[in-house]
Image: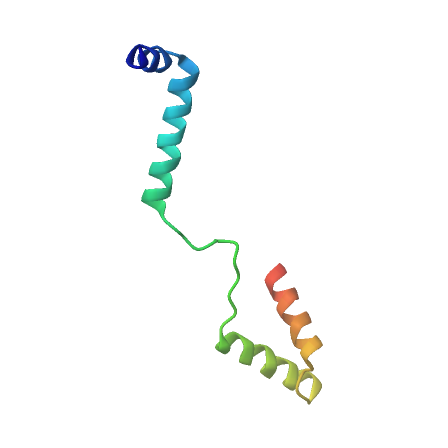
Length: 78
């Protein structure tokens, strides 16, 4: 009885669709793995020093933390 119930469920198009979708998501996760988010912006030390140098040339002083954050935000939006 349980095997006939199982085989009748497997003949249902909705069950077939759900199993296929589950298989596709599992394969996608396995193949692609944990890729970094392409929308994640990383500012390295060299870029940060460039921001500071540009500010110092224009203003004649080091930027405050707020000014540096504003420069980073403006740069990331371009």
